[in-house]
Length: 494
Image 1 (cartoon, rainbow, N blue to C red):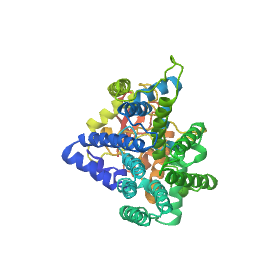
Image 2 (cartoon, helix red, strand yellow):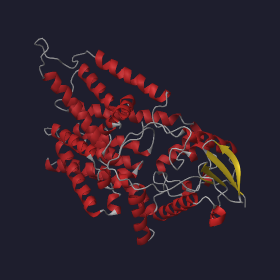
Image 3 (cartoon, rainbow, N blue to C red):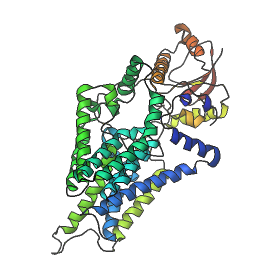
C-alpha cells in the first residue's frame, strides 16, 4: 500500500506468512470486507465452541430458555458497553479479565489479527469434551499454521488430551492424535527454525533480552504482571476446573494447569529471557473464557435449583422455551455495541495526530523516509496489566504519548522506526533496538547542528522529520514543510 514496500520493518522476517498472504491477497484483489467477515466468523466460532462445550456438561443448560440465559450471561462478560462502563465507574476494564488470560494474553482483541486463530484452541477443548479427541488435537495443532505463538499452548493442551487417552487405554486414539498434531506443526517448526534460527549465541541472547526486558516485560515477567487481579483469575480458573471434575475434561485441564504452574514458577525463579518468551501462561487465554463459560452454566443451574423467599416459590432463571428476558438483554447489548462503534468509545487514538497524518498522506512521495518520535518507555513500578481499549481519550490538542503508532497505516509512508512494531529475528531485533535508541537520542537533543545529529539523520537516509511542536528542532538543514497542529513536519535539506 502506498510506499510501504520501502519500509524497513516491511522487509524483515515474517512471523505469520500465511496471515500476511491472506491480507495481501484481499487488499490486491478483493478489498477489506473479508477482514470483517473472517473476524465475525471467528467471533461466532468462539461463541458456538463454548456453547458446544457447556451443553455437554452434566449441569449445562438443557432448555432453550436456559441456553438463552447462558448466552446472555456470556455476552454481558464480553460486551463493549459493559467494559466501557467499568472503566468509567471503577477505573479499569474489569470484565476484560473474564475472557483474557494472565499477562494480558488474549484470543479475541479489538479486531482481526493473527491471535484470533486461538479460537481453534477453544474449539479443541470443546471437541475433546464431546469425545472427539483426534479432532481436538487437530484443531489445537492447526492453529499454529496461522500463528506459531500457539505452539506451546497447543502442546500443553494436547499433552493433557493424550494423558487422559492413555489413562483410558485408548492407545490407537492417542497415537493418531499425536501423529496428526506432529504432522500439522512440522511445517511451522521447519519454517521458524530456518527463518529465526540464532545468528550466533551472543546475538541471539541479546535479542532475547531486549524482547523480554525492554519491549514486552509486561507479558514476560511474572513479577511485573502478577497482581491481585491475576490472583483472582487463577482462582476463577481453578473453580472452573473443580466444576468439570466429574467429566472427561478434568484430567486434560488438570495436566495443563499443572504444566502452566511449573513453567511459570521456573520462569519466575530463573528470569531467563528465552524461557520467559515461551509464555507458559499463554494457554490461560484459552482457559479463562472456557472457565467463564463453564461457571456461567454452573451458576444458571444453581440458581434454577435454589429456592428463594418469594411467596414460597422458587425464583428461577428462565427455563423451558421462555427466552424473553435473555433476548432483551442480548438485543440491548447488541444495540449498545453499535453505539460503541458509532460513537468511537473504544480504542481511541490521540486526535492531535489526525492533522499531521492527513498532511503526510497527501504529500508523501516515492523515496521519502519519515522519522517519527520513538523512545523506550520508563520501567513501570506498578504491577498488573490492564486493557487500554476503553481508557479516556487524551487531550485532542496534545500528543498522547511520544510516538505515533498508527503512522504507517494512516499515511502509507515508510518510517525509520517505531517502538510498538517489532521484528523477531535476532539480528533484526538488534537493528530495531539501535534505531529506537537513535530516535530517542535525536529527539532528546533538539539542537541538531550543535550535536552533529543532523549528519547522523542524513546518513540514515531520512528525508522528513515529524516532531511535536513542544520539541522545536534546530538545524540549518531542516526546513519546516508544514505546521500540523500539535506537530511540525520538517524536510531534510541534503
